[in-house]
Structures are given as structure tokens and as C-alpha cells.
Image (tube, rainbow, N blue to C red):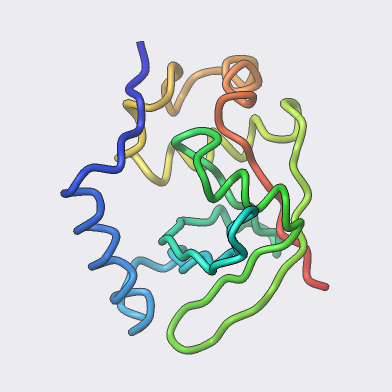
Length: 144
């Protein structure tokens, strides 16, 4: 049984620290600050995210499922990523299960802290990740 994501006090504290590290360009290499307008309020929200980056392509993975930033990204059709004072706005394309599976596996291999939120293991076959894809949306990032 997979763990359900909860935005606890500790998680908020860790996110706050990670936001600062990303802003100072001191966070792990593939970590960025995702900023997106709320789909109802229009207010800007930011959260630290870890991208999958491979062969010049970049993907945004939702390890905790369809949380608020996912719903907001779907509504906006684009996201802003920033790190170390630089930012870029990118269009997004949500992937289907077959396309998402290798990205999810790569993500789980690189970001082991999210393992409790997945039913499969980093070395599971791609078919297992295809089954997980509906629970963990994956977006291809497209330069405009």
C-alpha cells in the first residue's frame, strides 16, 4: 500500500529551506522552484521540484499524485521554473502511460525519498510504471 501525501508542518519547513537553497543555486542539480498561478485565485504559488533531465529533454514528475500544483499546471498549460536567479516559462504536455513509464522509473531511481508513494520499485519492469502513470502525472517541458 502506498503512502498518501500530506502537507505537514515538517514538509512545509523542508520546502521552505529547499526554496531558499534553490534560489541561492545551492540545491541538488536537478532541483528547481516551480511557480504557477492558482487556477481559481490567480495567485502565484511556488514549490520545489526535481526534474528528470536526459538527452536534452526535461520532464516534471508529480510523485505525490494530482496535488494542487498539478491541477494548476494542467489549467495554465505552462509553468515557470527558476534556480539561482534565472527563470524560464515553459509549455507543458502531459504524457500518456507508455511515454511516462521510463520517466517515472528514472525519477524513482534518482529520487529515492519518494519510494513510499509508489507501488513499484526502481528496478521494476516498465509495465509496472505504466500502471503507476495515472497516479503520478508526468509533463514534458517544452521551450516556447
